[in-house]
Picture 1: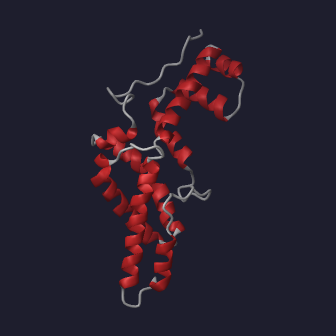
Picture 2: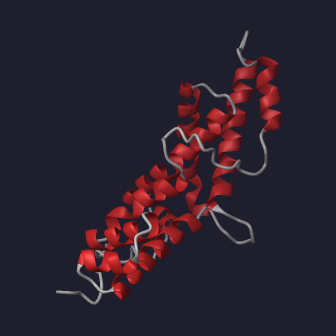
Picture 3: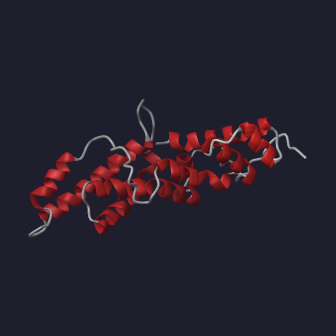
Amino acid sequence: MTSAHVNERSQAPGSTSLSLLERVQAQDKDAWNQLVHLYGPLVYQWCRRWQLQAEDAADVLQDVFQAVAARIRSFRRDRPGDSFRGWLWSITRHKIGDHFRKKSQEPQATGGSDALERLCDLPDQPPPEADDDPAGQGMVHRAVDLIRPEFEERTWRAFWRVALEGHATKDVAADLGVTPDAVRMAKSRVLRRLRQVLDEQ
């Protein structure tokens, strides 16, 4: 028996209409956990790219998200080019700078003038995400992990097999017992949600 469509899992009231950042600003604990899952590895990677030791990078990461928690309600995207990722980088850059300044002031600091040079080298714009993401996956993979629970298994399988494995729509439809239109709709729904999450960068 075929189905005319593949249903998405229903979400909590209002969650589909609010972006992740709006939910974080509203102090939604689940949204905060999602934000840290999505952006935490990126912040850690930024710290490591500026030669912070793993322990120091973890400390800076904690400082960054404490600052994000304190300031998230003031985040705005009023001007063209404003992005959460850019705002997050500005906080991270400041916290990395604090780390280097602290190191340069320590007696016999391991950072010394090298730390000050690295501080001066910090760019204004966020660096691109490197291929060697320490979490073993990039921003897109984390976003995919993040949205996965929002969809019914059949919707997800339709999206995955067509969009990522490259199977023909009609073959996936036959395997799942749905119409080709249902498979196309499932793919469209997942991709639209993925773009919503990634658009907040």
